[in-house]
Each structure stands twice: as structure tokens, then as C-alpha cells.
Amino acid sequence: MPTTMEMDQLVALCRRRGFLFQSSEIYGGLQGFWDYGPMGVELKRNVREAWWRDMVTSQDNLDVSPGAPAAFEMTGLDCAIIMHPQVWKCSGHYDLFNDHLIDCRESKRRYRYDQVLGRWVEAKGKRIFVASDTSGEEALEQTQLKALKFFNLRAKKANELKWEGPLVPLTTVTDFDDVLGPDAKELGTLTEPREFNLMFETNTGAVRDENSRTFLRPETAQGIFVNFKNVLDSTRVKVPFGIAQIGKSFRNEITPRNFTFRSREFEQMEIEFFCRPDTSADWYEYWRDRRYRWYVELGLSSDRLRLREHDAEELSHYSCGTADIEYAFPFLSDGEFGELEGVAHRGDFDLRSHMEGKLIRQGDELVVEQDELGQPKYRGSGRDLTYFDDQTKERYTPHVIEPSAGADRATLAFLCEAYTEDEVPDEKGKPTKRVFLRLHPRLAPIKAAVFPLVKKDGMPEIAREIYKKLKPHFNVFYDEKGAVGRRYRRQDEVGTPLCITVDGQTLDDGTVTIRDRDTLKQWRVGKEDCTAEVQKWLSQ
RNA sequence: GCGGGUGUAGCUCAACGGUAGAGCUGUAGCCUUCCAAGCUACUGACGAGGGUUCGACUCCCUUCACCCGCUCCA
Image (cartoon, rainbow, N blue to C red):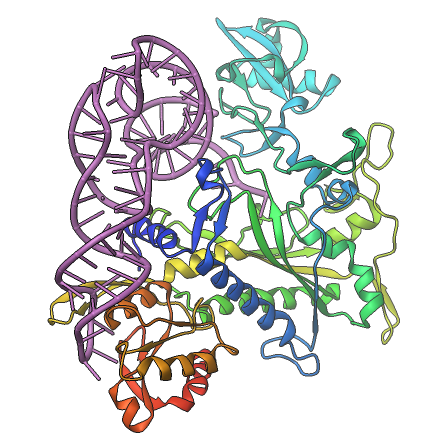
């Protein structure tokens, strides 16, 4: 299990063996962007393919899968990275990702910097700025009450408060140490305003103006929602069903750090699963548990992996359940976990948003957010995204369960988990340190390596034959240079599960040695049986 | 975003205001019958830009990247 010290070793190995490079390295690098090298691209492809195969193409549409509330179908989609700007306005990303926001350390609430007003007041020899997130009369009232409370004055002593001028925006205040936040009891609890323009912007078309402004998607999910009707109309799928998508997303993170964990360009593997509202809680549990198991089955140990249900406060306003699948990455401090995947119950929030327009919470209800004129702030498509059940003759807006995984984070977790050091005896029997990646064979970039023990006596010829037979089926690697021990070690470092060696005995009886990466155990199989042996290993 | 630190070959580490060295790795060859052996040869570096200087890897400035701490984390 890697410690913090060994994280550096893993990063060095990733670079040395061609898993991960910093983007644009020869120009000094670019923060938050990474390139996958020859080994890394295979590893990540295998992660993606394992996910797609396990979630989509191998889904049995006919019978109820183990643990599932009912039979269901899965289908895929691959949407454009740049979408109509209205998509992001209705989804809420535009507002959320384009503001200057300030946080209150005390109340944990977040405010839009330009919408916080307040006024200066002096009492008991102290001058403070009392802030409010309301406006007009309401703001005057609120600031009055807050000031009285802060200075510990009774209402009838309000004349001791010396107000300076009218309400002014918080943007006019330079020093937040004297600011009393809208929901705070103490001074100086507001953080500096931070720019939350987390969406990458670009322009579509030759003319660069406000109308040509488009965004690189900050998540793949919206592409699925806006294609919901297209999928229904073109595939004959019935609720319950899921749509899966793998693709790049972009967020202009303030602080990309921790190797590839928080990158500005990253790949998501998302499912939007549509179901009847009254069954959604069962489906939520099903997907939460199933997604957790997926990581375990591909080799993440359960003591570094955990499933964490969000508590009520942490839940998004539209969600009635969210769980994070988290991994104790070695670069985090003890007891800390990093998110691999979020499994969220999203209700009908997304489909409704794209029908009606951007939604906000009002009490327990989701309503369309309105502008000053009482019109929808961002208009939805107006399309009907409800579902008609032919059998029950019901029409409803499906609820959505969203298992949203990070492909790069999963890849990184598999690498961290796989990194292992042990000691093996060298040719003189002295124990020497060995570094290897204990990757699940399905994920290993190279499935098997083929070696002649020495480069003579006809061994290379036989080894090449075996290599050629395997190559159409698996990514295999041939090597005849130098000592065989060195060749084994090189394969260990990239996680190749099996090495096939042609030796003297092969010349006599036609068998070859198979060596296991993890145990170093060796056994013999007929040289014709190599394909079956590798296949057996992969399907274990 | 703030504070501190670090940038010399793929890696680990030298040296010097005046021609940048070594070990390991890698490549080629020899040798080698099961876990980084040996011999020979070769490849390969001062993060980037500017300034000071006759001359800068070295001194100064800027910038980029990385690490540590804080901040933040849809």
C-alpha cells in the first residue's frame, strides 16, 4: 500500500515507463493538463472499455440482473463537447460557474459578490460594515437588527448607531476584516471574492462577439438529457433504461493539484438512468451498490475504498440521495478520501430544466427562476420530455439516477492500488528490491510478454511464432535483448501479468514457461496453448 | 489566490563568472540456459525570456512548472 513517500515513486514510475506526462512539457508544462503515454493510453482505454462493457454492452435486457429492482436496458451516446449556450443556462452551470462568489466561514453560506449590500455604522467606538443579501427596505431593516445585536444594544437605543450613508455594494469595501456577513455573528468571516468562471469559453464562428460565445462542457450529463427524446424516438427503449456516455469535460479549476486528481481537462464516464418516480429510491440503491462493487472487482481494496452517503445538508437541493465512492489516495493525509464517483438521485430536475427553464428551489418546490420582469430567467426548450408508459397509460417525467465517474481518477486509483514493492532474490540469491504494478489483468496495458530465454539455439524463432499467434488477440510484447531477469523486471513495472518464456525444454517437448507477475510462480503449458492460457487469466 | 522552497542527461548527484563530469537507465554488439550479472562502444542536460558582464548554468529581474503549508474544491 503506497504511503505518501511512495506517491513520488509512483509519479516517477508513471513518467519513466510512459504512463503519464505533463502536458506541453518541453515548453515548461501547463498546470492542470496531462498526457497519457504509450502505457497510460492502454491502461485508461482498458478502464473505459471495462466500464462500457460492464455497464452497457453486456447488459442483459431480458432478465432481471442480480440485485436490480427490475429488468432494464442500457444504451450509449457520444455528444459534442460544445453545445448550445442555453443548455448551460438552463442546467444552472452558467450562473454557478460565472460569478464572483464569496463564502462565509461561519455560516457556510455562499453569496454572489455583486449582490451583497451593506452600510457602514459606528457605535461604542467601533466602525463596521453590516452586510445583507437582501435589498431596499428589507436590507435596511436587516442591517439595523444585525447591528443592534452585534453591539448588544436594545432596540430603543438604536440612536446610538451612527449610520454612514446609504446602502452600498460590498464591492466598495476593501478590507473584509470589518465586515459583518449577512448570516454571521462575528466580523471578518467572509472569504475574499473568488472568480467562479469555471467554464472554459470559446467562440463559435468567425465573428467574435457576445452571440458567438460558447462553452466547453463542464460535464457530459447534459448531452444525455438534451438527447433524451432522440433516444426514446430512435431506439424503442422503455423506462427503466440508462444512457451511458464517456467523454472529455473541462473545468477551469482554481487549484489543480495532486497529480491527475484534479485536472482542468478530464474524462467522465456517466450514466443517466431513467425510471418511474415511485421506484427511484430502489434504483438509487441498486446503482450505488453496483458501482461500488465495480471498483472492488477491478482490484481496489475495500479498506482504501468507501461508500459515503451525503448527509441532508450536503445534498443538492434537487436530490433525495447522493453517495460518493471515495478512495484513500496516497497523496491525501491520513483519514482523507478523494472522490472517484458520485451516485446521485437527481429526481426530475434535469429533464424539467430543459423543458421549462432554469429551476430554483422555493420552499419544497422547484420553480422556474424569474427575471425582474417576471419572465423565466433562462427559457427551457419547451419540448415535451415526459414519458408515456404504453402499458399503464401513464404520462410522467422520469426520475434520474446518475452514477458519474471520473475516468482519470479511476485510472489513478488503480495505479495507486497496484503500486507494490517487494524483494526478490537476484541471480546470486541476494534479495533485491522489485517494483511492480499489481494491475487487474483486464486493466494491464500489456497482457503478456514473450521471451526466448537466450538469443540462440532456435529459441527466438519459436518465441516469435508464439508472439505472432497471440498478437491478433491481445496486446503482447516481444523481447529478446539482455538477461531474462531484466526483461521480467521491465514487464513487472508496467504491470504485465504473464511472461511466456521459451527455454531449452521447449526444444525437447514443446512446452513453455509461464511466469506470474505477482507470485513469481512458474508453470509449463504447451506452446500451442498460450492463447487459451492468457484468455483464462483475463477472464478470472 | 497567499506564504515558503526547488528547477543541471530519463533517474540520482557533481563542478565552475571562462571547454558542464560521474553512476544508473537507454541503444548497439559480445557473452549469457530463469529474475536489474559481466565486457565494449554510443546517445543524452543547465525550465523559459530578458538584463548586468569581454564572457552567465553561476549574479539580478520576469515568467513557467513542481513540492510543502494555508485557502478552495461544481
